[in-house]
Image 1 (cartoon, helix red, strand yellow):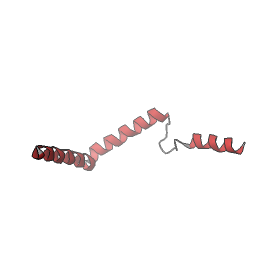
Image 2 (tube, one colour; image 1 turned 90 degrees about the horizontal axis):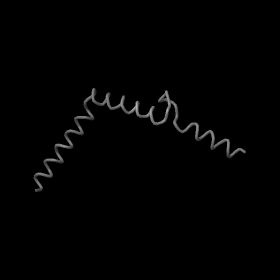
Image 3 (cartoon, helix red, strand yellow; image 1 turned 120 degrees about the vertical axis):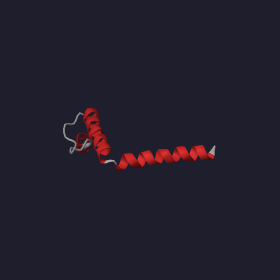
Image 4 (tube, one colour; image 1 turned 60 degrees about the vertical axis):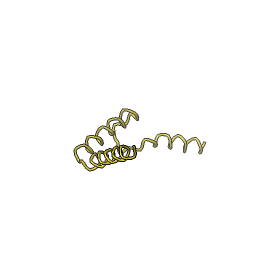
Length: 64
């Protein structure tokens, strides 16, 4: 039983390392993450801070 668990853990670790090192796959994951980020936050620019609007409202409320 330990042999099977160890083998499965090794295979899973190998797949994870392969995915991290495979540049094309990593690029695809990055692009998909960016698409989801835009969809969730409704922001066209990923360089924009998603918390900027919240921080501005919080700052203006504390100055009032």
